[in-house]
Image (cartoon, rainbow, N blue to C red):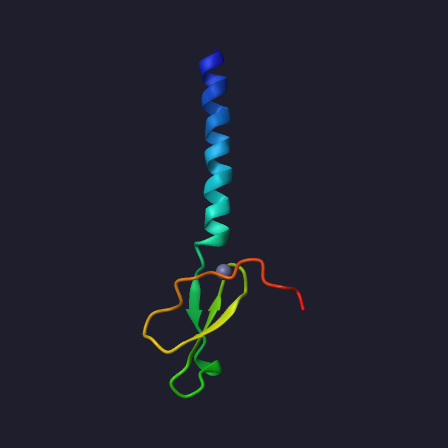
Length: 70
Ligand SMILES: [Zn+2]
């Protein structure tokens, strides 16, 4: 019985850490074509709402989770 409880606690801890990583790394960038400025492509993160411009094809690989509220 103790083993089962230990497994449940371990699972919860792993789930919490996985969710934190998802918040800081797992940005889901979506291209916002209405905000494009010439060669700059506007991307908006669907997870944290951050906005970024990129000149390359792919979305930015860095996440700005928890941006300043100002
Ligand atoms: Zn983000």
